[in-house]
Length: 242
DNA sequence: TATCCGGGCGGCTAGTAAAC
DNA sequence: GTTTACTAGCCGCCCGGATA
Image (cartoon, rainbow, N blue to C red; front, top):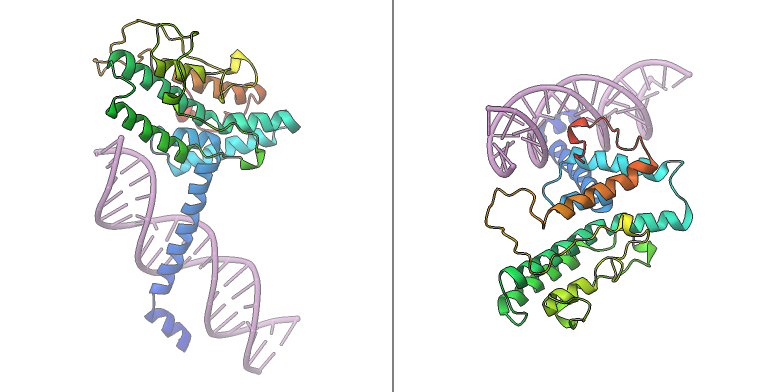
């Protein structure tokens, strides 16, 4: 046995360190994929995302991008921007729901300290998690969650000033307008003065949650219609329930 | 309890440099 | 040109901790 081989035997740490670096590289790249692929980014917000899922979604996304049927040029850029803003849009919808709940169910005033703190917290998180995925597109709309700064408009009767301000930015009106009409711009239908009971924790399909599930359908259909095989990715256990 | 994940370890292989 | 020694990287396996 050579001296170098003896030395190698004496210092098994080197191999450990190398392996550790290698695993770190893999995890770092997986993490980057999770932040880059819109589908993974969207799902990450709702819970833990497995490494295998990140890879599966990356494959789906790349297949969609490289599909011959996938639009080119400006429309492609618009679709990419739409994908990138999917999570952004969902976050915005959730905030609208929360504002509606706080002002109508909890009867909170906009000047309420607790109300302001909740909104400030969500706004700060929104800025953290909704950075543009495709910064090169440049033209992506910038979010503005400063609800309390918008005055209540006459077009939202029955709503509090805060709610009206939120609705004012709704689909088709604000930065989250969907470029392809109502078919791709799911919106919540608020019923003023309709009592919403959230006291039952087992309620699976409250009026607040159902439209968000619809977003998944829009998003998957958007890919699936252009690319019928896109979602056939040997992952029947993760097939979306539509 | 099942699953996921990180860490550690050993084996294997391709590439490279030195010796012949 | 061939052989030999060495290195770096990849891969599979096992184990233990964390988590749903």
